Length: 449
Image 1 (cartoon, rainbow, N blue to C red):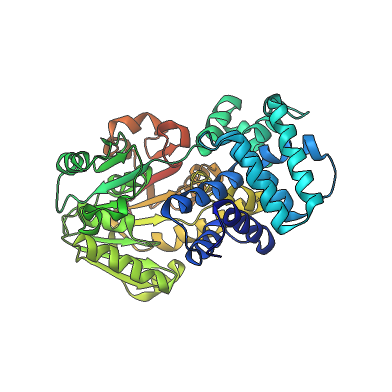
Image 2: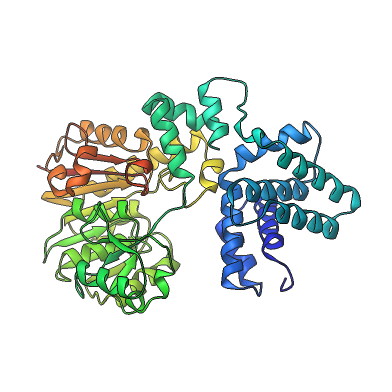
């Protein structure tokens, strides 16, 4: 493993993902942990893996122009896709170098015949740059799917919901690399102070439009490696998910339940808003994630969080009493975070949307019994599917008259986000291209009986 270069390692990961039907982040970590390469090369491996998976449908279509219906071994196909990705999307890698490296890998892993085929395909691609502008036969949805590399069924669904232009914008945003963003720990430092200190250390830090506690690091960098992170002055969190604390709007001294809490980003944000005064029960179904919540709270200097382990559906039977605020950051299809997790779009189906919506509704019903009279229940997801979002909440309210949509949610959101709330004022749906942040949905319900 130690002697393999970045492209060889990236190919290993792509092969393992396909062979084991596993997640790229897990296979990537497994391969990188066993290799001895520089941080720069590790970054290249990561970009090659995620980029090739992200652009898979486009790359497949281009490759089909040169190999037709010929059967190609899995590793050879992945090598060609990986190389086409470099040729098209990585400006800093010379095209000839990408071809040469691919041919050398083909020689080592196969034989001269395979190397010649790889060389021929890639050189043909270089000679025909217009191949990237070709579109498949079919309607607009099919063309958007291939051009922007998203599953056709999902594109068709979005076109019905959002129209062609909005769908293209969603897909384009999903294919862009995410910004690094951090949330300021206001228990220790102000946003302006931390931004100034990060600027002094050469980071291009600018305030988030979405969150009063958010800072964007425009030139990337390893934020978790800074002393500001290690000493608890900030934590990594996407801008969109920072809105949840504004929606929950907890006050010092309240009892709060975060029903699906790991790894603790939103939980600790709630504690910061509460001035570390009150009580937060942070539940998660996975026992190994309890330590994540505990360590995050400790690093940030937060003492009011009590982590518990269990199925959120069972929480009403645990004698925890009622809460002033409950956050249900529900399990979902995750279609709002495709830019971070490209496997998601290829691994989900329409049936997944329906089955997870059933679980979400059960969670809403179960947890609603624990909301104190006059208290609020905030429901959030990182998806953009109405069946999991607006339709879900309306269905719940229709069958539970003791809850009403809380129209004051809009007023508690940052000004830049208010026009993304619907006419009720109780829902906000952020799409990935609105702010170049994660797609996210938030609804707030108030218990009146």
